[in-house]
Structure formats: structure tokens, C-alpha cells
Image 1 (tube, rainbow, N blue to C red):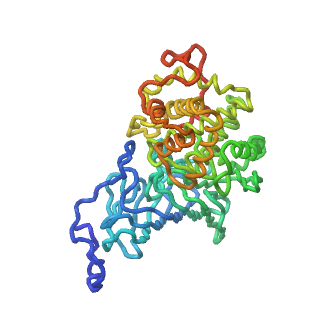
Image 2 (cartoon, one colour):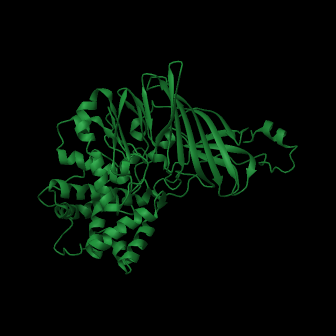
Image 3 (cartoon, rainbow, N blue to C red):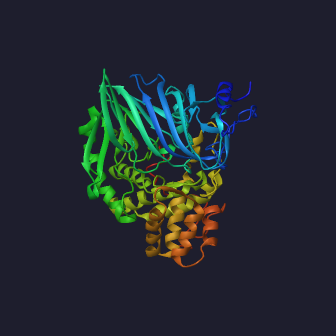
Length: 496
């Protein structure tokens, strides 16, 4: 049967000014925007401006949620079909600009037949009525089941397991979340609370972001939670979401956040979003995650006895640093991941040096000793190997953490402290609320240094062997040193 709506064609035939979709189109197929690591992630032909995601939670975290996702976009090319990333849920209907549209699945794409041919530059609204299923394999991301509800962990390739969209950080958009849940539960999402309405035992919570966000950074928490509020630098609202029974136990950790924000602002400039806080979830994910304005943490990180205080502090700073590096300035492609994780690891290590007497130079020397092995196992920092298809978070290897922080250490050695600090501040200011590339970072570094750094970056970012460390010709990479390298607090267990 043709992949168009016969009923719709008949209704539109009388409209002479409308260009109809061809009566027959090739079979639907998954598309992508050409990301080297995730070929089918993202979709060509449109730019999403805003998402409105409505979810209804009945109180059981293994049952599908009823959902409606509305996408406001602008076409960037003529379109007869619209591909959306969506992989875990049942699609009940799709409308394009209010008109019912045929749809089909192809791989992890929802392929929608536009009722009329859409010209380039046209606004378009896509409304998908679907379910959002939390019962799938959590190892592949999406919904995370907690002891009393749900949270999200969508990095790097998993937001489309929760809601349909253009699931690539190159296409950032504003978000509205509308979540209905039983009255005894608390809902918190990225952004700020914009409304709350109770009716017949159910409360609907509405949150909106004030800054564009990559889909992989979306967060919704549903559970028996306490929301703790305090004030950060410059009056910034800080809100933490924790299991209600743990609020007193967690308070000594949570009260550290305003000071950590102030420290990061001294390093790189003003905090880039409308709020911040920690979402402490009673679950075992194996990682922490920098979801925008509300970073996800495992409860056991704070309540267990196996971690020294400096280590937990460093985890907190790592996720906080991501709000600048990775969230406000997002990677244009997943090969640019080193910019996220290298910087978050850098500031985590700098904080440990300044607050816990953990010397940066020692950590970087140990990383240098392992750098060749990391590159052999995972590829160079800016050209990582393709992750395993059945374990996509395998992308998050040591080379993108300490191996990439090592690049920043070498850069500081090469251009000097003053130029390095100016580069960091300029980078997050110029590219705020956008996606940026490795090439843009290296070009900015050359401009600030006042000389061409192409050869330097070619070796450090793309070489299979680690170049000599500026200022430390005695450092060697290859056989590990006898002393064990300090682990990034985010790895293990964190893949971000």
C-alpha cells in the first residue's frame, strides 16, 4: 500500500495551491545526519525548535506511560517524509500541522508521511501520540527504574527510547515537560516549575527550560522525593531532589553545591543555566550523569562507605563542570566527546588539587604513562573507535576521560596558564547555548595563543602515539608505572 494517506489526499485535492506528496514513495528507511559513531542518529531536513512532552504515570514503574510529544520545527530542505528517532513504545497516531499522517517504523526511526510536500524554511508541528515504555533493557539507556519511580539516563543514544525526536546534540531545542502522576508522588524535570494542577487524585507538573537542550540531557524524576532548596552564587536557585527518607543523611553533601558552583565560576565564568541541583536516585546505574540543570547521581555514592570525601566531591564537580562543557556548549558530533569529558575531568582534577592536595601533575604523569595503551584500546581522543552496537556506552573509555584531560594539560604547558585560562572562558562564552566542534576549539586556541597550533593538535588529538609532553621530556608512555594512576571519580562506575 502506498505510504500516504488516501483519505488525506482526497481531502486536499480541491486545494489547488497545495503540492501533494507523491502517491507512491520508496519503502521507509532509517536516516541519519552522518555521525561517524552513530550513523542513524539524528535526521536530516529539519531543525527542532521546541519539544512539548506530556507523560502520564500511573504509579507502576514497569508499565508503559501514555504520552504525547509535540515537536515544533523548521524545515531546512524540502520534505515529503519526516524521520524521527523513536525505538521503545507504541505509536498510536501522528499529525503533521494538525492533519492525520501515515507512519511506519524503520530500524530505530519513526518515519512519517507528510500530508503535503513541505518546502524548505517552513514551520512544521508534529504531534505523536504514543507510549513510553520503561520496562526495556536499562543497559541501553532511557528510563531508569528507581526504588519508588523513574528517572532518565539518555546519553549517548537513548532519548529516543523515551520520546520521539531528533536525538543528536547537534540539534538543541527548548523543552516543556508536562507530567501527571498520583498525588503522593513528586515530579521534577529539567528547567523550572511553570505550573502545578491537582485533580481527582492526580497532579500535573509542568516544567520549562529557559535554554536550549540536547535530547540526551533531558531529565524527568518521578518518586517519593523531597525537594530541598537553597541559594547559589548571584541568587541562583539550587534545588536537590532526593529520596524523602534520606534528606538528613544527604544534607552534608548537598550543602556543598553552592560553593562548588562559585569555584567553577571563578575558573570559567557565570553558571550558564536557570537552576542547578542534584537528583539522587535510589537505583544502581553504574554511572552518574550530567542531565541539564539536574545531574543524576546514585544514592550509594553518598551513603556507601567505600569512597573518600575528596572522591565524592570530585564526582560532584565533574558533573557540575559538564553544565558548561557538554551541556551549554554541546558536541557537534559524538567524535567531539573529548571536549565534554576531557574538560569535566580537568576541572574535577583541578578541584582535587586545590581542595584535597591531589597534585594535578602527578595525575597527568600517570595518565601519560597509560596514554598509548588507551589510544590503542579506544582510539585517539578526537577520533574514538565506534562503540559496540549492543553496548553503546562503551564509547566512554579512559581515553575520553584522563586521556583527554591530558590533552588539556599539554595545551596549558604549550601556551601558558594565562592563555589557557583565556581560552576556557572565551570558549564557553562564545559557544553558549550551541553545539561546537573540535575544529572550532583548536582554531580558537590558535587565535588566543597568537600562533598556529595545528601540528600540536594533530598529534595530541588524532595520533595513535602520544606526543612528547611540553616541559616534561622525561615522561614516557607505554609500560604503566609502578604506582596506580588516580582514577577519575566518574570512571568507574561512570560512563559520562
